[in-house]
Amino acid sequence: MTNLPLAVLAVTASVTALPPLAVAHPSGDPQTVSIARDDKRPEVVRVRWRVGGPDDLTLLGVSLGLLPPDRVLLDGAVDYRTTDPAVIASSERFSAYLLERITVADGGRRCLGVVAESKALARVGATVDYTCPGPVDTVTVAVRTLTDLNPAYRATATGPAGQRAEYGSGEDSHDWALDGAPAAGSSDSGRSSDSGRSANSGRSAAVRLAALGGAAVLVPVGALLLARRLRRRRAAA
Image (cartoon, rainbow, N blue to C red; front, side):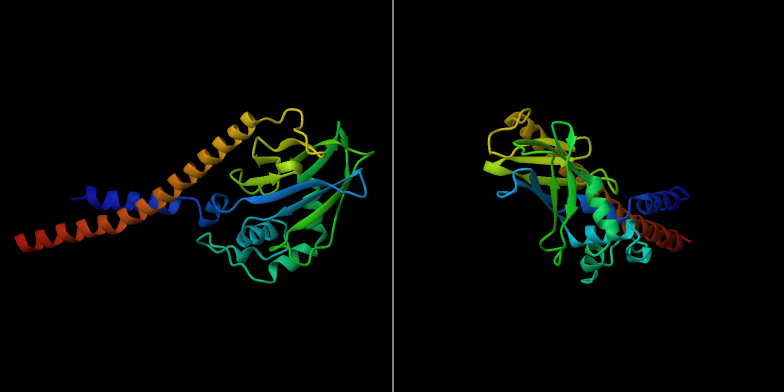
């Protein structure tokens, strides 16, 4: 008799010990990044970054101290508001964050970035122009945005002539050929490996969500079994 209540309490504790809902956001739409050379300025590389979901943008705003902490609720849900993108986009902290987490290098030489003004951050994204020491044909672009909040975040990137890559924790740097030819070190096998990691990440997220849903079902089931056993004991008495 005493084992059942203990089991119910154990299941309840396991549910409350699971990560908050905010942790599940990396399993949603990925960030997107586009890389291109400025047609009129061959030494400038233009990178456009866009967040995957507006709630992720709010989480970033809270982490940068631009939004109040209570915008992330106790149950992990995010209180997104339509004014959040404008607050974040107008902040120098956000610009500094982008310049720290997205970098461009030409043969080991760092290119200096300038964040353009954004009036529709959630919908259009943010644009950064990186000026390199001279005209560039191939650059190394590193993207580490949001992985400081959760390593499960991913970013899907596109470049000239249909080049594609996926960024994530541990795979945050890729070479891009700005003239459209395949960059050194870029291969179909590398993209396949990235796709495999993405699939594994997606499966892991599905397992976490399934565990959350399954545990949530076990709690009422355990309570129902306990109630039935109590009724039987009372009837027998």
